[in-house]
Image (tube, rainbow, N blue to C red; front, side, top):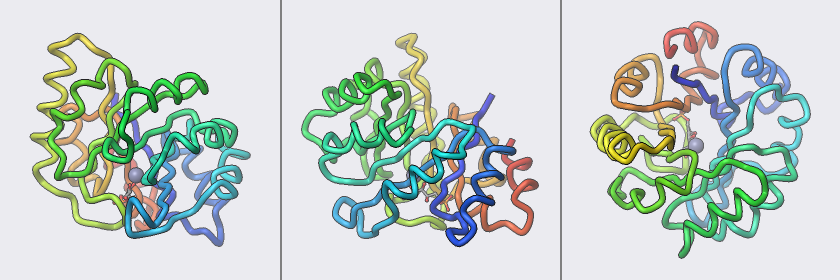
Length: 212
Ligand code: DX5
Ligand code: ZN
């Protein structure tokens, strides 16, 4: 059963509580995009917003770190109430030890890659992470167009996970909507992240229904 994660980057920050209650009621996971203006050319939000969401969330918090030196902030995200923490493969020299640190803080670990990084580069880490985050746009901004070769990347990764009998999940992030959700799930995606297609839709509940 596919899970729907909502990227809060597209939330109405003047009425954040409304969007948090919507996700509590209709989606499965809060996806929190953390950008530092260094790893990606944009800055999003930080701990005050994460903690505010955590204070009323009834669903798991999945923080997607688009920052350099992710290991420096693992403890803070655990303390802020995050249960799933992903970092980019090329943001660290030693992905396995960052995943280990995330586990030692009681969180699930994920590794993210941008569309120009071969999925094979994730293979050494499939047995030390609970999920892999396949970007279907280049990390940095919400509202971008879905990149079509994501399907073949997801199915290649899924085949490798199945071949090795592993339980690592696949999360897909960027430009996801009711238009591509079924094909992504068929290719092997377990968690679909959607921001603008849901939260900026005229009828967000209907947008989620289409994705399911
Ligand atoms: C991009 C982020 C995504 C993105 C999703 O850097 O990681 O989570 O905001 O938003 P949409 O669904 O609008 O592409
Ligand atoms: Zn994201």
